[in-house]
Amino acid sequence: MSVNDQEMIQSRELLAQVQTICTDFALHSLDQTLNSVTNFAAQNQYLDVAVLGQFKAGKSSFLNSYLGKNLLPVGDIPVTSVISRIRYGEVEKATITFLGGNTRVIDLEAIPEYVSEAGNPGNAKQVGVLDLETPALQNIKTLRLVDTPGIGSVWQHNTETTTSWFPETGGVLFVISAERPISESELQLLQEVYLYSPEIVIVITKCDLFSEEHLQQIEAFIREVLKRNFEREFPVLRYSSFKNTSRYNSDLDEKVFSSLAANREQKYAAILKHKITSLGRSCLTYLRIAYQASQQQETDRGRLRDTILDEHLNAPFVRRELQLIAGSYKEKTREAVKAYLEGFRSDLTAKLNGAYNTECSTWKGNLYKVTRQFEFWLNQNLHRELQTILLSEEKSYELLSAVKKHLAFYLKSFRERLSYNLEQVLGVKPQMEQWEINIGELERPDISVSRTFDSHLDMLWFLFPMTIFGNVFRGHFRRQLPKEVEKNLHRLTSDLTYKINKEIDNLINQAMRYMNQEINMIEHLLAEQPDATAQLDLLIAKLKEALEQLEST
Image (cartoon, rainbow, N blue to C red):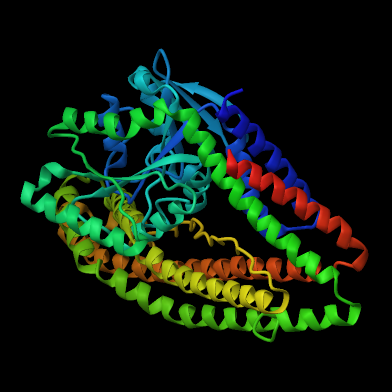
């Protein structure tokens, strides 16, 4: 038996041991980590390499260029929250797996109908994942490239969909556009990715747009920012779909893919070992807390509980603190959204006026028919323009990211205080789990167009022949444009304010669930009775021995 096989067996045995302990002692704080590690352990056919990045960073163009064929849709309109997995196959093949579990083989030309915003608005077709097979990956058959929805706007992705792949990834290609290196939201995502996969390579796209001197400055800036935030360096590669593409593809093969593919089994085993070892240490710490508590008398255990879960760590205090945090952000939402959307008013009105001047001469018929044509045109154009604003707007993401960042700091402080109290009272310092708060996908607000006339004047079309009154009514139609823009921007402000504030409540509830779960679990461990001491001592010894054996292989 090879060292690699032995390591895999020991890893899976340790995972089973940890699963049993987590169930028996209700270690719910480890649920998320345990599930992700279990999923990773079950997936042994491919090593996933996730391609992550901001919307418009050029992810899909990069993949299409590397594959040598436009298999994934690209454009200014983002794709829906659909994961695309690309692996080797003797012939090109596309398979859709729906959220309900059913699958369907589709033509390659039909891919945009399932994954693009235009073909599948709001993921109305309930697509779960797109699997692509292509002979282009013949040299890296053991790898699977995972294209994820872009980040940077709550309209462009479902963060949970994207981040759910982090624990299963064996490597990450983090795509950054040379046009805008490197944003706060990109840094946040990188920090989340780094928790699960240290195998991260930065790919700078659209390098054909800049001179060599400028590219060196961009690279230096990205390296400096990453080193300052992570205290380590990441490999940085360049890419362009239009210039020197063959050389860039060779760099990717040589410096990333070939190494991962050639050492796929070793990489997988090492990643699994790392994840399970970390999980096992956390489990061991919680057992030690229960062991120390079980050695105390009944009256002493109550005192220990009150000391560890002091006035700043009890549920009512935490709830009040979180409510204050939510209120401080929610009261600013409307003005922030209003100021943001107001910046589009003049350009949007001017664009509609220009389009109106071109289109109005093509409308024929009496007043009633022309009015319906105008209303249809206005609905279509206004809907398209406002939809474009919504799809590219970052204000919602910016506001919610600020809340998420504040809550992440609060959760970190909570964990540190709890860890300090446990160490001071029981002499055990737990390795607190990283809690991830996810920004959900907001439902897009509706867009509506009012009737052109307050009364039913157009029903009296026979009294107003267009040959005589045409210019009068065309002027009236034109004056409706700024009113409709103002009305819909006002509605969008109200709708976005409501939806953002609702999502703030969701973020607060996530944080509260994490802390309640941790408090309840600690209370449960502190309640262990003296007759459990021997069992806990045996479990600790067995788990410690299994960890030492795995770490020594």
